[in-house]
Length: 159
Image (cartoon, rainbow, N blue to C red; front, top):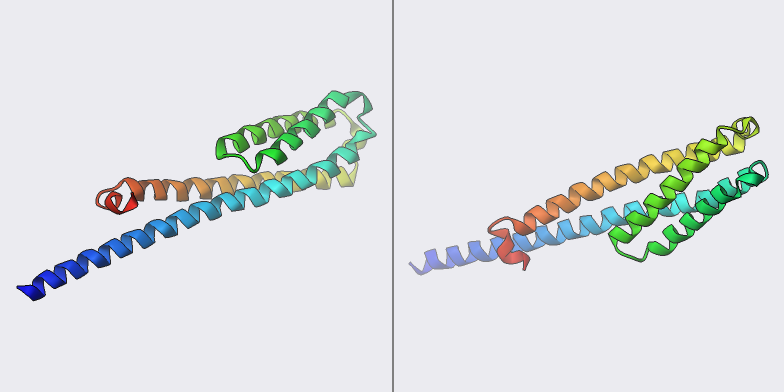
């Protein structure tokens, strides 16, 4: 009888340790997923000044658009220390400003023909794709973590 109780107690302790370690691993994956997004966003932020300086001379009278991109970039850079919602809002504004800039640049044949601007646009597009993939990974891992925290009996350990 004592051996059975010890075996049951050992199984419960083993399960608690396993559940706790799984939750910690998922929590760390969520944190890593956010860091991967942050890396790509910083890359995006670093590319924007190069793009602005490349198109500035050709788009002198489109100053409002350039200023909007610069302002949105500055907000996005300062939002990286904030919460997910604040970063998402700032990055959304930046995406819209860049979209307007790219749409306007289509009206300037000299810009479309410039290899430097084309390269920067391609790098930004590539970075946007990487941000999208990083967000997808983050969402998947965060969902797994949240599900594990809420499922019974793991929720007994999650608290």
